[in-house]
Image 1 (cartoon, rainbow, N blue to C red):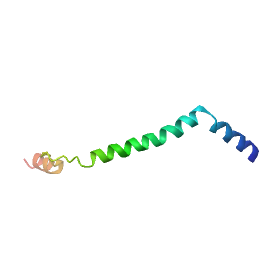
Image 2: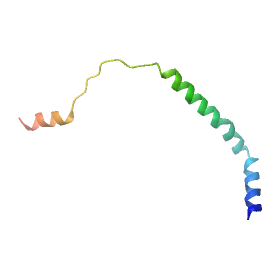
Image 3: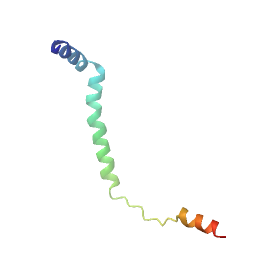
Image 4: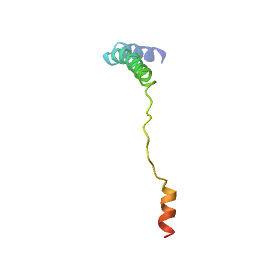
Length: 63
């Protein structure tokens, strides 16, 4: 059973899909870290208005 599992694993390791995934996984991780570092200092300070649904429902039904 271990012989079959070993053969399957070695065939998978030699496949093109495995090689591509091994190369792209660290690249995607590195890109995400760079994006997070670049966006870390960006702070949105614009004033935003919002409405509370609870207060709006109370206002509508008390009239």
